[in-house]
Image 1 (tube, helix red, strand yellow):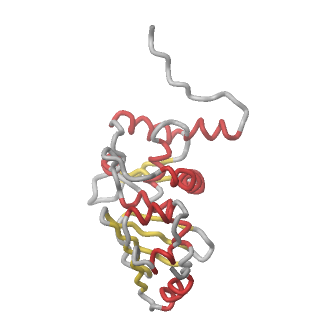
Image 2 (cartoon, helix red, strand yellow):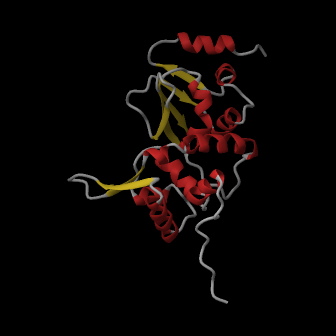
Image 3 (cartoon, helix red, strand yellow):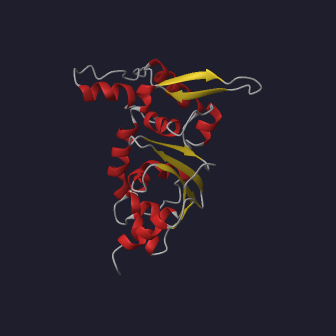
Length: 218
């Protein structure tokens, strides 16, 4: 029997169905997760999406371009490369990924032997905890790498892979603490007070003392 073509639409007059028509395929939202950290080359996307085939990734990116979630542009000389980046509509998926991360955090458990780990994958689950630090740039360092989160005075947040030269707060912790923070088992104040996280501020120690003071006594 010939293989049936992949279904392209649910053909349902429903907002949720329309959304899933665009982002419900395997890998699509994880590509969005990567591009929320900034423009990426195809090779960088493939490296940070372990398990995806080159054909699958190329196909998903093509579908996402057609859905106006992603655009591709050529970098100016001397860099001879193209990058993919999210459109405004694509960036509007951040709250969707935040909700999915909050829902999935309690199911993380301990990493499985087959699990890949990237530091910036913790950015979305930690956004709520890091927003409590106020507007500014927070750099987070794990054994697996670094990422940074920018929170504006208007409440808008974005994150990026790697360190930030203009970081105002530097947080060092581990994946187990990230998992506890994401799952609501631990607050940032409790993590700092217990020594599971180190918080250093470029503008002084006042906020760190506030965090320690707000942690419950053991």
